[in-house]
Image (cartoon, rainbow, N blue to C red; front, side, top):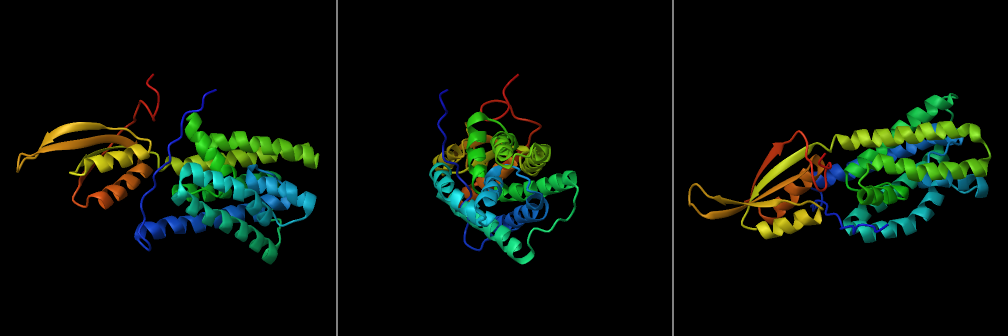
Length: 297
């Protein structure tokens, strides 16, 4: 199979200590903490392995008795290097923070509280743990990062194969669960691991779907070529429309493009940075069909 070429994704240019900067980094910190809480209080006490690098680290922890977070950090380093190369340096910086925080939170909570059993019910633990982890991952991804590891792989592959991020988690993490069955030789835990994976993937999709509402934008700017290039960097297309100003009757190039809600925020940020005098009109759309969106039936 010939893999399509992946273009580096462009994220909003954040000014240090701006409201966007605080928003994104707050989401990363809070999301990483949620991931750690889900693992420490619901997943690790029952030796569940819901895939991912942290799940694989739980397996290794049983073999070498080394802290789960530290193992995950060591595994994440080469995967992160790939993510920086493919997804861009800015993406990598945020992911470094999320990756380190996740490992530090997991080992820190383990050091302070151990892995207390909140409930002995494996079904409840797998569902609550999966939902909390999925919420955390969703918040981190919304901020333009990942929690590292297989999140990076899932994000890249979801783009290549045009499937949701949650579905890629199922494929990758399912393989890790099969490995855990061979290592632990306890097939009774497998259904609960699968339930946790499903809860993670569905929660991630639910969080991201809130950012996936389709939008259309009309942009009027004298710096339309620079804006065009940034839109193409986002893996989005568009169309030039010809227009005429009502007051001076000067000729204008109007950019028409379709994108999702999260990308709209990115668009508004970099357009403002390129041309503070630009005019942007956004439109709600029921749906968008065509290249980069749903296929035309």
